[in-house]
Image (cartoon, rainbow over all chains, first blue to last red):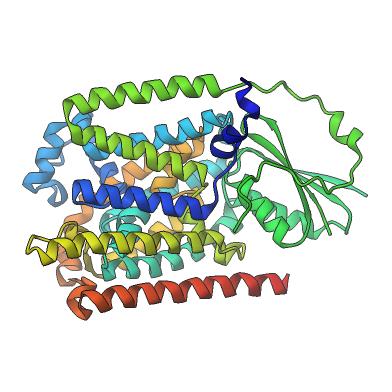
Length: 177
Length: 74
Length: 235
C-alpha cells in the first residue's frame, strides 16, 4: 500500500489541522486532565523544578528559598526528575511534536542563523522564565487554565500579556529581524 | 514579470510573514514572490494572509520540512 | 474557517515552469518509518512509566497528546496575542477563545459537581492572588515570548520540531525560572501578600459567573472578528 498517497494519511498526518480543530482537541485533553488529576494543565512550574535539579547537580542548594521551602515542593525535589508527573508531560510535549513532524515526513533540524537569534532566545527565555514564576504560570497555567478555572487572575494576566506582546513586537521588528 | 526570492529559512514566526508582507509591497501586480521557509507555522499563516489579501498562492514542499510559498501579487 | 488541507495547492498561478524546475531538487526522504520507530519508543516508555505509577503514565500520554495537537494544528498562544497587533490576523486569537469557552464549561462542570456534593473544589490552586507581580510577570512574559518565538508550550513543541533556537530559549527559560523562584520570597513579601485571589463564582454566584465569562469571551470574539475585517479594508 502506498501510504504517502493514501487520502486518510494525507488528511490526518500530512496536512495541518485547522486552528479550531486544535482548540477543541486541546480542550478535550485539558478537561480530561482536570477530571483525572484534579488539576489543570501547567507547563512552566515544571521548568522551575528542572532548574532546581540542575542547580543541585552542580552543587547549589535551593532548600532555603521560600519558593521551594514547602513540604510538598521539598518532597517533589527529593523524589527526583524521573518520578515527577509534570516532567513527563513536558517531555511528552516534545516527543508528541517530534512524532507529529516525523509522521508528516517534515522533520528538519533548524540551526541558529544569526547572533540576533541567539540574543533573542536568551533574553526571551530569561524574561519568560522569570515572568512565569512571579505571575504563577505561563500561557498555559496562568492564562488558559486560569481563565478556564473562572479566576480573575487569568484575565489580568491576559491583559498585561497582550501589552507585553505589543512591546515585544516592536522590539522584534526593530532589533531582531 | 519578475520573480523575487526571499529566504526565510531558519526564521521563526512571525519573521517569515513580516518578510513576505514587506516584500510584496515592493512588487508590481503580476510579479511573483517565492518565500523559502522551514517553519511549519509559517506554512500556515503566510498562505492564510496571502489568500485573504486576494493573491494567488501555491505551496511546494521542496524537502522534508522545507517549503516554497509562491505568491502571485494580484 | 481555514482550509483543512493547506498542503494541497491551488494551481492558479501562470508562471514559467522552466524557472521553477531548473533548480535541482534533492530527492525527499521518507521519514514515516522513523516516525513509527519513535511511536514504538513512546509506547514502551508509556508502559514502563505506567508500571511505576499510573499517574506518570497518564501525564506522559497527555503530554504526547498536547504536543501532537499543538504541532498538527500549529496552535500557538504567542501568535494569538501577537498577530492581532503585528499582522492583523486574528484567526488564532479566535481559536484560543473557542478553547477558553469549551474548557471553561468543562472545568466549571467538574468544579460545580464537587461543590454541590459538598466536596472540596478541585484545582483552586490555579485561582491565584492578583498583584503587581501578576502584572509585571505577565508583561515581561509577553515581551519574552514574542522575541523568542514561542511561549512555554510553544517552545517545547518547537524543540520537538528541531529548532535549535528554541532549545536555547528553553535552556534560558529554565535559568529564568530558577531566578524567579529565587526572588519569589521578595515578591511574596512586597506584593503578593496584599494581592487577592478572586474566584468569579464567589462574586457572582456559579450561574452568573459562567454566563458573564462566556458573554465576555463572545464579545472578545466579535471584536477579534471585526479587527480582522478592519485590517483587510485598509489593505
